[in-house]
Length: 251
Image: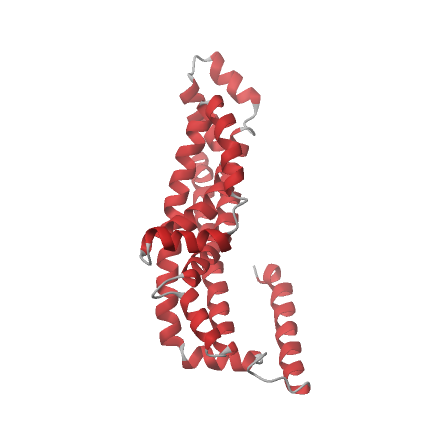
């Protein structure tokens, strides 16, 4: 574990050290580019307020991401069993990804107000497609021999899907989860930035309007930590679920 993260830690320390030295040597105004020590100090001094906004952002992102996972799975199953629906809906799903967030977020706020709904919908719209695409791709990776063997034993389409297709899509599904998780926090912050009462997005907007670059960067650091936390949880789920079949085989 330490060997795997050591190169990243070394590069991060070198980057932060170079940033700190540059700010002091070039005498850059902290209003424009505060040094890492200034960002850390601002984070510690305002940790209670930033923590409150981060909690709101994490709750919205988790809710939207959870709903998105459920919708993506149900949709993928429906499209897998209905080729006509897949051919008809996939171009529409692809087209939905071409709509820029900068146009979509204000419209969501305009249509649904400043409550929870527009932020959750935006997270679902952003994270839904990568998971759907990963699931459908995973379904197609089922070894034909598995399907033929189950078919020769009289298994129906649903039985083949449950016993062979679904397990074969596990790796692709987890890859889609990781990709979508990186978008969930960003999409939530962007929705809050467009209009909200609480959350990291509105906190960043307020700090920017007050020319507090250190607070903006402190909120960005917290946002990155939230995304890494989500990815860590997914990695833990991956490890826990991967041990199941192995444990059963040795039982």
